[in-house]
Image 1 (cartoon, rainbow over the protein chains, first blue to last red):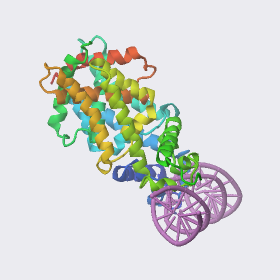
Image 2 (image 1 turned 135 degrees about the horizontal axis):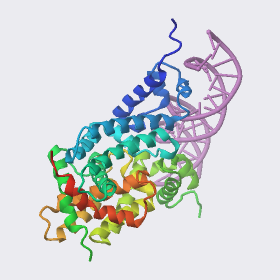
Image 3 (image 1 turned 90 degrees about the vertical axis):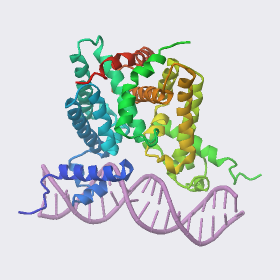
Image 4 (image 1 turned 30 degrees about the vertical axis):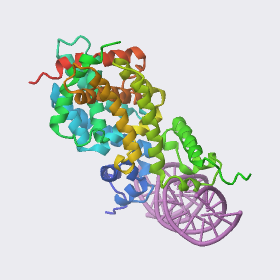
Length: 184
Length: 184
DNA sequence: ACCTGAACACCGTTCAAGT
DNA sequence: ACCTGAACACCGTTCAAGT
C-alpha cells in the first residue's frame, strides 16, 4: 500500500506542533515547519484545519481537557495546587490556552473545553454545602490560582517556584482578605 | 531645515506601534507597518531598537509604569479594582505586558518597571501594621486581581465585566478561603 | 548619526493540477 | 478525498550605500 495518504495526518501535525510549542514557545511554531516534520507538503494540513488559528485552538482545547481531568482528580486546596503544577509543567501550552488571542466565539470546541474546566471548579464548590454562592467562590478561587500560575511563569516572583511557596500563597488568601476589604 | 532626520523617530514609532496593538492586537503589529506609519523606511527603527522584541519590551515597560502610577493613586480594595480596570481599559497592552514571551532577563528596563509595580502593592500591605508577611499577602492579592483581570479579558466569565462583579469577586476571597484550606 | 533600497530567508494562504 | 508545487503578498533582519 502506498504511503501517499498519511492516514492520520491531523493527529501527526498536531503532535508535531505541540512538540514545537513546548520547545520554542508559540513564536517558534510555524505551520510549514510542522507539516515538514509530519512528512507532508506545507499545505497538506489545510485539508484538516481551515487556518492557523483553528490549529492553535485545537491544541488549546486539548490542554483544557487535560487540565480539567487533572482538576477532577483532586479536591479542596489540592485542586489549586494541581492547577499551578499543570501550568509550571507545560508552560507554553498553558500560555497558548490563555495568552493567545484565540477568540473563543470562533472556536466552539475551545469554548466548550474551557467551560468544562471551570465546571470542575464550580462543582467542587457546590459539593461543599456551606458555600452560599459556589459560582462566585469558584471565580475567586480560579482567579487566584490562575494569577499565581501566570505570574510565576512570567518570573514575577523570582526564585519562588517551589511547592511550599505555592501552598503558602494559596493559603494566604485569608491573609489578603483581612486587609483588602478595608475601605478608607 | 530638512525633514530627512525625523527628530524623534523612536517616540513616533512607539506611538504608531501602540496604536496598532490596541486596535488589532499583538498579532496585528508589524515593524514594517509601524515604520510606514511613522513616515520612514522599514528599517529606520533599527537605529533605535536592536530587534522586534526590544520594541515590544519598551511598550510593555511603558504599560508597567502607567499601571504602577495608577495603583499608587489608590489603596486597599480600590487598588485591586484599579488593577482590573486598567486591564479592561487597554486589554491588548495588558496582554503584551504579561502574555508575550518577553524574557525579562534580556530587557532590564522591563524587569525594573514590572518590579516597581509589584513594589507599589507590597508597600501598600506594609503600611498596614497588622500584616505579618506583607510580601506574601501582596503576592496573594496580586495573583487574585491578575487572574481575575486575565480571565475576564479572555471571556471566561461571560457577560460579567461590570464593576459590581469585580467588587464582589475581590470581596469573595474570604469566601474561597473558607473552603480551599480544608484538606481531606 | 541617521536613513534608504535591495536582498535573504522565511511566513500563511490560495489555486490549479496530480493520484 | 487527499496531497503537491508554484505563486502571492507579506514578514524580520542584514548590509552596502547615500546625505
